Figure 1 (cartoon, rainbow, N blue to C red):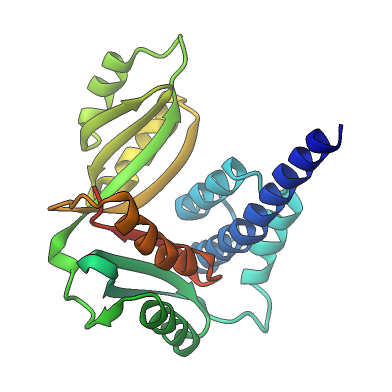
Figure 2 (figure 1 turned 90 degrees about the horizontal axis):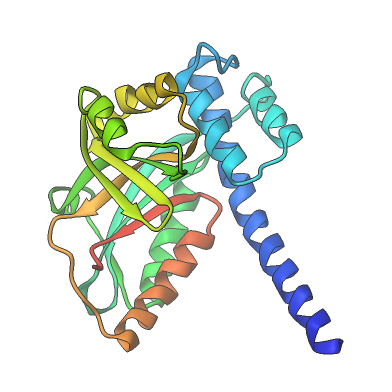
Length: 236
């Protein structure tokens, strides 16, 4: 009885911990999208997508509404997207994407994480050519979905590859096709779990378990930061 209770408590704490990190980041993206293209998701595709991604992470409706309202507040701060690049332990390449209202704070924090965890930042643009930007749309595979038909339907929208892992399917395209790809999913009526831009390493490297543990310490620190939206590496 005691052990079962402890397991449930730990599971609950893990869920709350994830929510406390993810929810503010999702809300920030919603505010950015609303400020950029207006508060109506029907006319603002970027906002519509941000809301869909937030709902997939179980962000409550009240939080979504508050994030949209925050964009039109008189004292609303400008949130900008900034990227940082660096090398982690064992020469691993790391690309960090942030959304921040204070770039000085962000760069200081990111630099500290690298320096304290066996890495170092490199000048902006140093790693850009070593990663390809891809549009990625995830959806759940269900019995009624014909993947061959979906693949044919998405080719005109820029589809390059459909990757199937168990019941999770990811559609990949060049980043320039992000808008047309997501619109194609809307037209097909397919429920999207997540749609995002990713950076895919041109030459992935393999690490030992011990090496991977060292790198993960740095990645965890980066991902825990409120300003960091995504972390990409060249780990295979």
